[in-house]
Image (cartoon, rainbow, N blue to C red; front, side, top):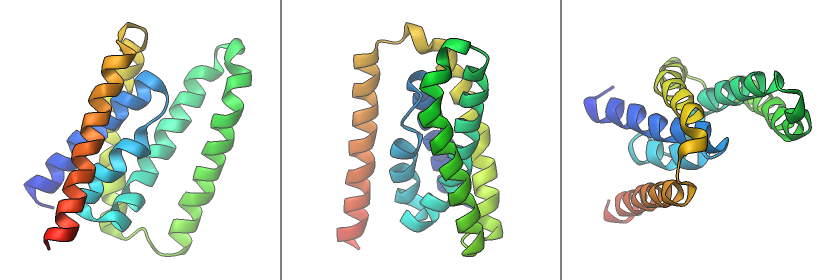
Amino acid sequence: MGALQLLTLVLGLSVAGLAKGATAMGLPLIATPILASVFGPKQAVVIITIPIYVANTLLVLQSWRVFGYLRSLVPLIVANAAGAVQLVSYAGLGLFTSDLLALGVIACIPMLVALMAGIAVRGRLDQVRFRQVIVVLLVASVANLLWRTFAA
């Protein structure tokens, strides 16, 4: 793995983890196009599957302690269960090569650090400004993907 790939993996999962922690959503939406710009779409989807499952599991466990959140957890529990079916199906299809599996596990590190930071600042963020930053990052990622697709 080159320096650009490692930097993209760390920064992409950090931004996505921060968004996930702050808003409880957005990890695949943000990380997939960022990773796809360097690893390609198929590899990005496989890599991101592991951090998504880890993040959702941690959020369920964190929220489970507060009884008032039980009703709101049902969709997350269902989504996480589907994510476990996705992990199993990707493994069954042989999509988790040793390199992609390693990248998925490595991607959990910056995602977890940023997820915890996002959870810590959840109530103090200006949600409108935060969404604007995320939109700019998404537009830049899509522009990069389009450039790479049509300039090649």
